[in-house]
Image 1: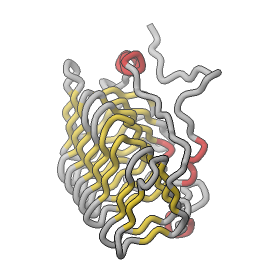
Image 2 (image 1 turned 45 degrees about the vertical axis):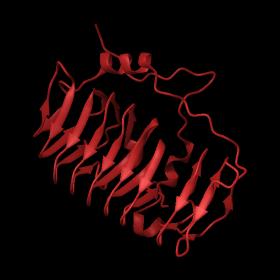
Image 3 (image 1 turned 90 degrees about the horizontal axis):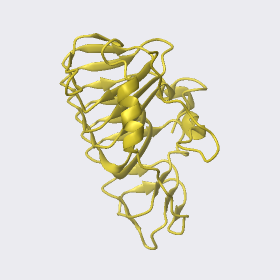
Image 4 (image 1 turned 120 degrees about the horizontal axis):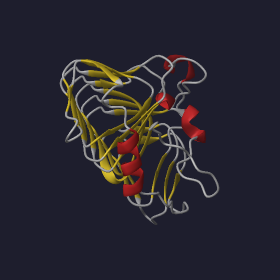
Length: 237
């Protein structure tokens, strides 16, 4: 883990704090390293293979976590508030009818809420956040970051949150700096792909030298609340 609020990755990186939690099975294989604690609510649900390393504790009696789904009402509000037609600059294709987004070049997003049905970054494409911007993206579909693609690459993860009902695939050499929340889907980190931030998903897979770096600065982010209402977007009529 590291702390983007206190310095660079190199000056704040630690072999603790990169915790992994699950309501189900956690498998740590073939030389994988977890720099933190591993906890599941499933008795006997942790399998640490020979050669794998967990620097913290391993427990199988953690409280079960209830994850809030992304509702259709929330998606409809995001679609109505989306600034996708005006907030994107650079080289990209956006279909205002189907709400699909594809880029094979460099793209920058202004501050605001965006709604897409699919989001694809092709090989070496980049999606950046404008300086000082706060961006929330809703994707009612899948996200694919192809070889060497980057989302908010080198930026602060707290400036980008993606809520999705579909899967995320981060392919060879791709970088992602942000928060990904998709409690019914799969987050697939592939060969040498690097994710900096936080992930909540139904299945999380990291294989073939993929890296995940938890940003401790995100520890105070809460999705949902019992007594407050949060605005996800607005549009002046």
